[in-house]
Image 1 (cartoon, one colour):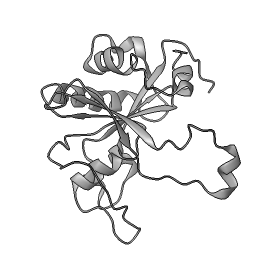
Image 2 (cartoon, rainbow, N blue to C red):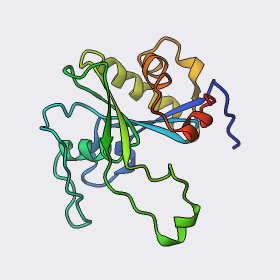
Image 3 (cartoon, helix red, strand yellow):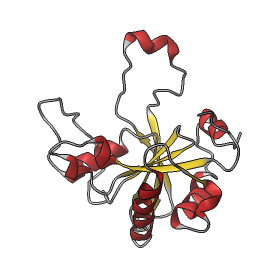
Image 4 (cartoon, rainbow, N blue to C red):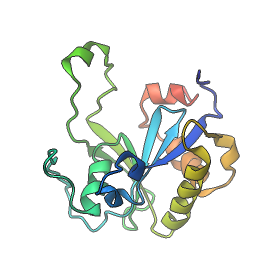
Length: 186
């Protein structure tokens, strides 16, 4: 399928729980990844405002899985180039966050561009009063966009997700140039 890089980009939603279908899958409940044109990914992560800052994280190995929803949520935030979470104290603000280190196998090093393994992420904060409607819409879109199905940006209308995308995400000056091209904004 060839992607068109126009303003009316494709939108699909996948719950993170689908990526972690083991006995610990329940830890990812409520985390969603929104794909714009199957390339630009935005993680929507439930409330982590109770965690003290600065955030730090010990990456578990295969023998030490996550033990709490808090760990799964924080890991998703700290490994996502773009993310959204509710926090009334920071509602309406945007923050640049340090991402966890990423590594690519040596055989792929020559194929990577400068933006392929970012060390900084962008985190948008929304109000806790906005989160339930946003989460409900993400769940509903999951039912309509699983697999290779999608909806167009324009089909979102005036929904909570469309409102976030139009008023916050697409207006951000911190998006990577390659990502802007993919969604027809550069």
